[in-house]
Image (tube, rainbow, N blue to C red; front, side, top):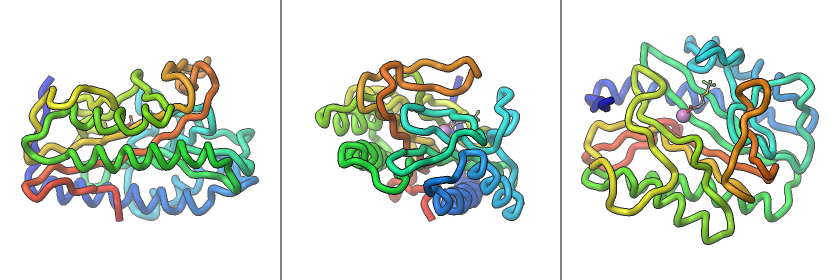
Amino acid sequence: MGYFLKSADEIEKLRRANLAVSAVLDAVEAACKPGASTWDLDEIADHKLKELGAKSAFLDYHGYPRVLCASVNEVVVHGIPRKDVVLKSGDIVGIDFGCFVDGFCGDSARTIPIGEVSAETQKLIDATRQSLDLAIEKCVPGNRLQDIGWAVQSHVEPLGFSVVRTFVGHGIGKKMHEDPPVPNYGSPGRGLRLKEGLVLAIEPMVNAGQPEVEVLEDGWTAVTKDRSLSAHFEHSVAITANGPVVLSRA
Ligand code: MF3
Ligand code: CO
């Protein structure tokens, strides 16, 4: 246990890794159209990653087989790209990508609507993105870790959505997963005091139905137990004297 506080120089390196992540996500997002398979999306990510001279953070991580996670509809996170998972209008896809540049890790995710989605689906996406923005605003020295989770929970629950508890955000640095774990729920004013130099990957996973998830036979794909839709957004955020700096936003 124990977290690392990053120097300005290290934060600059984390910025570079996260800008590469953002560029890869942009390339993948542009290809999120009806008819594209999640395998196609992975190939785009892999190509862009190599072009940028970055190293995948996901490939071979505990045996994960690809560079991208592509999580369609009821898949919460860790959807493995497949040729037979083809996007169609009305779907949503969570794209999650991480890479190393110069020994430092970037990690970010977005949920993309495919073609025309229902108003309720769009509401889930918007609420999840907004909850991340509200959580980011809490990334100020002196605040507490659970202020972040509370910001997510108190935004999405009144809208009738639920917060996934099985998976959490994390510190990030020379490793993808560092302390502290960053839950998307909590009580305001509780937990670790946020300090200048802490860098967190904040990643709300929000379900349209109940919060429970289960992992499929492949050992990775996490789906909602009730098969309701799920959305996921993630940014890597540095806590600085000047407030939050979103490293994975171009
Ligand atoms: N970005 C994710 C995370 O923050 C997913 C990584 S899972 C992996 O944990 F296996 F694909 F690496
Ligand atoms: Co992450």
